[in-house]
Image 1 (spheres, rainbow, N blue to C red):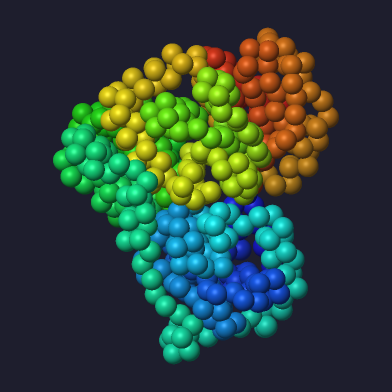
Image 2 (cartoon, rainbow, N blue to C red; image 1 turned 180 degrees about the vertical axis):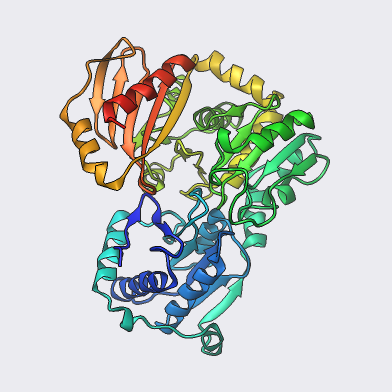
Amino acid sequence: MKRIKFGTDGWRGIIAGDFTFENVALCTQAIANFLRDSNPDTKKIVIGYDTRFASEDFAQTAAEVLAANGIPVFLCSEATPTPVLSFATVHLDATIGISITASHNPPKWNGLKIRIKDGSSAPDEMVNEIERGIDRIDPEDVARISLNKAKEKGLLQFVNPKPDYLKRISELVDLNTIQNAGLAIGLDPMYGAASDYLKELIDGKNRIIQIHSERNPIFPGMKQPEPIGDNLIELSTLVKQEKLNVGLANDGDGDRLGVIDEEGNFIDQLQTFALLTLYFLEVRKERGSIIKTITTTSMLYKLGEMFGVPIYETKVGFKYVAPLMRRENALLGGEESGGYAFRYHLPERDGILAALYFLDLIIKKEMMPSRLRRYLVEKVGPHYYHRLDVEFPQESRDEILRRLSSGYPQRLIDKPVIKKDTLDGFRFTLDNGAWLLIRFSGTEPLLRIYAEAESEEQALELTETGKLIAGV
């Protein structure tokens, strides 16, 4: 059996390859053993799942194992976005939450995420101990009872956390203003668990057109349910054809946001993060630290200086962002993949709430998205971003790492490299503020190459140079 290994956010594997019912049961037994040893007063566990192939069946398997170990389970009665599962973990006072999801991965993947009491991702020390526990379990020792038996024993209850989640969201954002704005809005939940959430929240005087709202585990028309430009062609076309004001997309499990402006252009995740930061600092006039991962934009440093708030940087992954958000009572935190978290809610990504805040920004500034982007450039100057994902044979990983570790270029795109660091991967900062980062994905067999520069040409050239440096 291939070893079960947790990555940046949870364990992910190929369905019927390493992500099997047997392995899900094994992993869940290790979670039960961990809780028995570290938290004997475990109250309950909430289990949710997305719309991927057999996700509800994998969730049922996890519930059967936990109940057989005497742990009460709240099992979601329908597909549930990860931020809603995170909210339910807090709202229901659960010890942990488990979500069966592979988030934005391609269709053949599924996965398992763990959320702790405050709704954030499980820390490394917890998942490392669970991994070690998996290796110690004999598959014959995995306990399991049927859902009917679990219900008879009072160990299983079906729940729908959606109403309480929607009520909480209504307390965080000015829904009345959004509902009465009279905007024309395109929505793309990408066949995922967040389908109808935004539509229900913003229904009123707005004209709303939603696509890809049905369940389809093969995610047709897109490589994977990740809200990036290449996967939002249909939403972009819809916005242009229907003359909509904005297009909003969530990934497969609803914790990421993608934005299309009224001209059909993708607003990249770095610009979206900067705009949300500007919204809180300038429109809402709130103050607090901003937490960014290494792959997000340097625009935040300029905004932080402009409004007098500190900016903190972490490795990639919200398991690193969340502790800093708690420590600093941060205003918001974000990452390059389009995941953003907000004070007063959860120290965890919520693409649904992020979309509502973006709509409120449009309304309060009385600017369409393309104008907002120009307004941002007026504030911080031009910043262009590009990411390149390169697949590589797993056996080449050590050789790629050796090449990256063996030396550093002194110049890139004819600019001096003034700083080199290995906080998370290999990053090179140039004298004009541009940067190149090369790192291995924590969830897929990919080398990710990121760049931000003052022109689109420079950003593209930097990522191509990154390929040459890595030898891929």
